[in-house]
Amino acid sequence: MWYKFYAAKLCLQTAKKCDSGHTRNMIFLTIFYIHRSCLETCISSNFVTEKTHPMNQTAHISCLQCNSRMRSIFDSVGSMDLEVMDSAKTCQQFKKGETIFEEGTYPHGLYCISNGKVKVTQTGSDGREHIVHLSKDGDVMGYRAVLSGDKYSCSAVALENSSVCFIPTKVFVSMVEKDPKLAFKIIHLLSNELKVAERGITDIAQKSVKERLAQGLLLLKESYGFESDNATLNVAMTREDIANIVGTARETVIRLLFELDREGVIHLDGKKIKIVDQGKLLRLANIFD
Image (cartoon, rainbow, N blue to C red; front, side, top):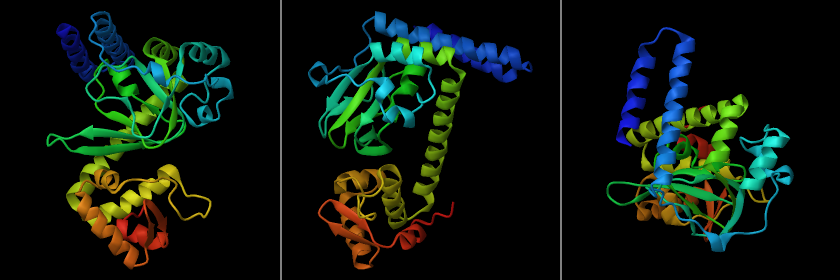
C-alpha cells in the first residue's frame, strides 16, 4: 500500500508546479481517489481496528426530523441523499466518559452528534492528554481521517451522556463527490481547524497560563453557552479537563480559578463555573477580535 501514498505525494508535487487550473483540479481529484483507495485496502486487509459499540445502539434518529442536522454540514443536503444516509447510519448512545473513537485506529466512517457534548483529545509524547476541540450538537467528528484514509489523529470522549450517529465511509464519500456545497463546507471546517491550530501555537508561546485559562473559559462559553441564569457555563468540566484545554498542570488551574474567584471575575460552585464579569475575562484573555 506504500506505493499509493508515494503516488499521491508525486501528484501533489506535480500540482504545485502546474499552471493550468483545470489540470491542477484533476490532479487533486486523483489524489483524493488514491487516498480513498488506500482506505479501502486497509478495510479489505483487516487493518481497520476502530472499536464498534453494538451494546450502545439506541433508537434510530431520522435525519429528516433531526434538529441538530440543521446546525451541521448536512443542513443543505437533498432529501434523496438524506434518505440514503438515514438508511445506512446507526445511532448510538454513549455514557459520560465513554470513548467514541480512539486515536491511532482506522475509521469505518464519521460521527455526527445528535445530542450531547464531546471532547476531542490528543495524546502528547509525554503521555498527557490535550483537548484540541470541544464538540456539540450538529458537529461532525473523524472526517479528516475518513477523507485522507489515515488513522484517527485524536480520540473522542463523551463529556456527558450523548447521542451520536455513525455514517459509513462509503456513504459519506459518495455524498461529498456529488455535492459541491457539502465539499465546500468540509473545506471550510478544515480551514477553520488550521486557523485555530495556528492561533493555539502562538498562544502557547506568547500568553501566560492565566491568559490561556481565561481564554479557555471563554471557549467553553462559546462552545456550550450558559445555563438559564445566563451566567453559569452549561457544562461541568473536571479541573483536569480544564487543565488539558489550557495546557498546564491541574494544580495550577485550581490555584488560578480560586484567584479569579477572589477577584470577582468568576464564581465557583463545585464543578460549575459562573462568569461574573465577562468584560474583565475578555481583557484577561487578551482577546480583541
